[in-house]
Length: 498
Image (cartoon, rainbow, N blue to C red; front, side):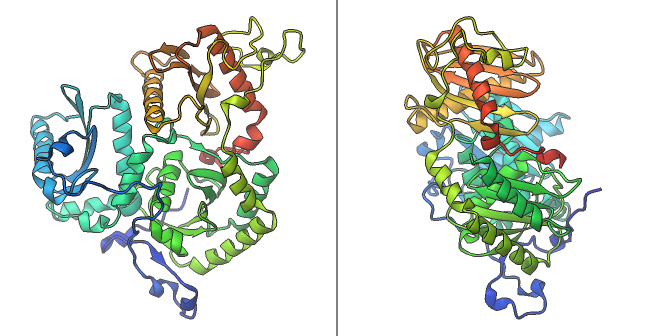
């Protein structure tokens, strides 16, 4: 049975991140040295900030937003809004609450309302209501999944035990408990447009030489003991290495939410931190404690524990980890990998000649959509491969290629990710599926998806690409991924089954 962190912290105010400095070491009790701080907005330009605070529901600009997210309490008190000031949106929040209550009073629950081009999606989590209003044509399942992640992000900060407050006082105002964390939610919402992990529920690794990743994994394993539940070395949202204690599990969604929380909080970047965090998929009602330290602007270490008084022990562990990483040049290799980027579609190996004794299709799964019939000497015959996402089902990991020059604007990239979302939902539709393959063509892309018991592949091509060459190219992509799997995946077992 896995051990659980105590949730007693919520008997008073939920604890906020706390930090130690070296001049505090003289105290005999670490817990008495806690300095509560609220994460500040980061100064990094890639973190989106909440904007348009002067807007409210009467503003024309506010009404023209294509996608709104709201969190409110069951009494109608606003907790978070993507756009505008929550205080100014109190009346609108009350309207949303009234809709939910009206349907519930009739013995039903509301999930979706369509109004013209808009979808209004509702997610009720006890006393917490989450709503998305969207005209982006994203599938209902995708929007619902995004609301689930937003709720999970709230639990990372407060745990599900926040419900106790509403049991005591139905009109409880929880916005002060989330004060200063708008940036965390805004960053997560922004990631819905660029991070495949938000809809395929897998994590990605930074590409590294196998030996380099082994060094990182060995030193994490060396510091993992009874006080460390999980040790993970990250570069931005990508995993370098991950080690878990026996008989514990770490869900990719928890990794995504934890990484977002760390990356969007400036206080974690500027000081050594020891912060209470909740992992919703692990235990939504209890806090763990995360030791967080940035080695440079992109690379950071997270040590998760159930104990609230092991800061200095984890600090010593971090020092040991840092010494090995520096001595073995792991950190410099991480920066080199960042500069090189991930897999580039232009580097896709050419198809073997028909006379070769090592034909790709001879090593592919038997349920390939189509076998090679002729050698394919181009990237995708008459038109090119633009992008792909490959998900290993067993590892719960994915690799996403760099965008080709044909998809070089944020608008084009966002359009592609939304097309992937639709394809993902369609492939996994329990009502009419699941499917093994799909081929779609529109004015923007040719999309091909292939799902087996081992992997899922989503690929985008030039809209003029023909089906046969696209299938051949997908076969080659799968073989390419297999050839370099030691560099792009963390092998040796899934984090869900350590």
